[in-house]
Length: 223
Image 1 (cartoon, rainbow, N blue to C red):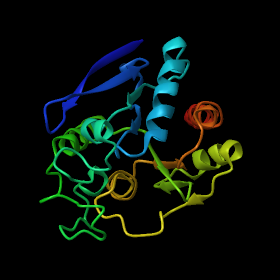
Image 2 (spheres, rainbow, N blue to C red):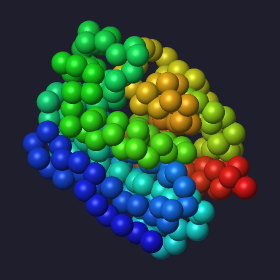
Image 3 (cartoon, rainbow, N blue to C red):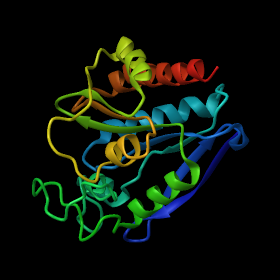
């Protein structure tokens, strides 16, 4: 079963859509989030490739919610930030949130959870308590950034993509999803940092297979 619906509106009123697969009565969903940073198209490409695959068939015994374009204004302007010039992956209400940016490139916003996209995500997570979160990004230092109890799934992914598994991206990220969900709420969260500038073919082949392997592992662990 596939259902597309409005997840939230962006700063400038654009509709951010979610796509749901599987029967919602089967328990907590897996969340796949991409397009958080508008200058990281690799994750969006992978999300749409997965969407295409799931439209053909969805075989898992748990529901999935996919949000391929979380930061619409950023994607349209090829900009990391949202319509208010805020980094959405520094704006979540974590215990370590700070109004002072660690780096000027990553402005956290005037207050934690100040952005409409952040508010919608926080509300959705608190309502649905997902069983697993994948946040699709891209980075020169590609990795599987694992937060929470997700090592077995990360190791299954590594078998396919051969990416290192890291607990930290290598610098402070206050207000990020990995901290909010993975560390502070014990929701297994993998920030999938795809190699920046990777070819379309590799994203649609290697990384689709990697993500599908992750779903297979979650299914296996559920039994």
